[in-house]
Structure formats: C-alpha cells, structure tokens
Amino acid sequence: MIQRKVIDLVNPYFKPLYNLWDHKIMTGDREIPVRIFLPKKDGKRRIPRHKRKPGGIPSNILVFFHGGGWVTGNIDSYTKLCANMANQTGHMVISVDYLLAPENPFPAGPEDCYHVVKEVFEELDSFHCKSENVTLIGDSAGGNLAAVVSLMARDRGICIPGNQILIYPATYYDHSESSPFQSVHENGTDYILTSQQVQDYLDLYVPNEEDRLSPYVAPLLAKDLSNQPRTLIITAEFDPLRDEGEAYGERLKEFGNDVRIYRMKGALHGFFTLPWPSEDVKKSYKHINEFLR
Image 1 (cartoon, one colour):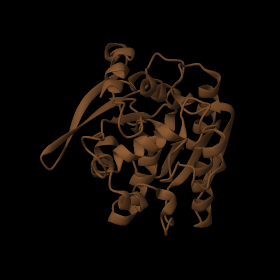
Image 2 (cartoon, one colour; image 1 turned 90 degrees about the vertical axis):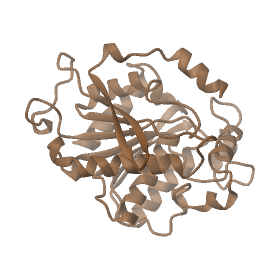
Image 3 (cartoon, one colour; image 1 turned 120 degrees about the vertical axis):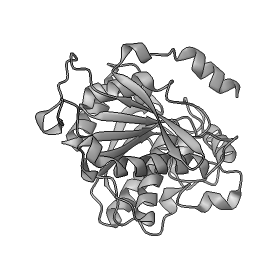
Image 4 (cartoon, one colour; image 1 turned 180 degrees about the horizontal axis):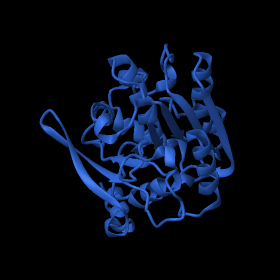
C-alpha cells in the first residue's frame, strides 16, 4: 500500500540510537517479529530498584501493539516511540510486528498479538517477571488489540496480564452516521482522523460484516467483561474514538474491574505519537507512571 511506503520514508531506521534488539517468535509455520527495548542506563530516568532484575534489566514488561488502523504501521515506524516509552517508564518494552490487513484480515493480527503474549507468559521465569507485572499497551488500533488480547487470554485460559493501557482505543464497529457515539458525529470530519477513515480501515480489516460483531473486533460488545486487567484508558477530546473508548472503561467498571479514565483536553487523535517532550505526551506518561506504580 502507498500509505505504508510513505510511513516507511518518513520514519527513518533508528536502531543504532537505542538500547534494543530484534527477535522472532515462532507460532506454527510463521515467525512473528518483535523488537525489545530497554531503558538507557545513562538516561535521565533510572529504573526503580523494585523494577530491576539481576543485571539491572527491568523486571516489568510492556507489550506494545502499534496503531495504524490495522493496515499500516510497523515496529520500525514506532521505534522512536517505544524507545522513549522504555526510558520514561523504566520498563522493558516488547513491540509486536503483527500481520496487517487487507492482505491478512481479521483474525490474523489479534492472533499474532495473542501468541506473542502467550510466549511472554511462558518465558516469565527467564524475564524474572511475574504475570502481574506484564502490561499490554497500544494506541488506536493497537489499543483495540490490547483489549482484545486481554479478552482472549481470559477466554483461552492463559495468564491474564496485570494491566492494560488503552490509548484512544477503537472499541466499536460502527463509525458511520448510525453510530451511537456523539464524538463520531462531532469530531468525525474536521480533525486528523475522520470517521470515514476509521470505517474504511475497519472494512479492510474485517471484510466479513458478521465478524464485526465479534468482541475480538469490537470489545465493547463483549457480554462478559469480568476478570480483566487493571485498566488505564486515555482518550483525546477532539477524536471520533473518544466516546467509545470511555464507554469501554465504564463497562469494565460495571463488571468490577479497576479502571482509570483520563480525557486529554484539547488533544487530537494520534497525539501520543508526537515527538518527546510534547506537552500531551508528557501528561500521558504522568498518568501512565502513576498507574504503573
């Protein structure tokens, strides 16, 4: 897709600048690429003593799923963001290069993400980490995938992550004029992300209309949201996805989950990808680090 090529051109390869390495996780006959980031030892942020394992490596893990409407983005385009995430949180970050639509429609992407998380849980001893110290995090479509993988983990009987951080997540299937959410109608035409773009992405990601009613596509439709991780949801004021993200948080609360919801005033969809130290990004990490304590 042309959009992917443009993203590749405007996101240079930052690998030499950061404390990272690449790895591949086997699942069946496929290898899923991941990129692992550690906080810089000479950075301003130090790894808290209780988050270190032998050798000074953090014992807390963030598994990150990138945004891009399930059809664009990759671990290269999010390298700078993930390196900063490791530095700002003091956590190890594992960024997942999941399969993209339309070549690989639903459920290929969520299944990749699930298998990486499953592998992380199976290797917790080697990370000197406990399941409650594993956090799933993603922005936009990646926030959707984080929520979906948490549901998959519960439904399939593997360990449930201790936390999930959903940054302006997509949680519903309808972003047309029939959407029940006010933000789709108020913020769906005049800002960076339009409601029509979201719907176009969903059409590519889930071509089978019946599948769009699956909670693994639209987690807000899940009949049972019990036994989910501690959750932080961060939304943007002028974002068509704002209301469905907050509605998901409220439904999680109804099922007895520990949920915090923050709306970033004046922010647009995509603000989390702005360069550090953009003010909204700094505010986001303030909420994230308070949540992760």
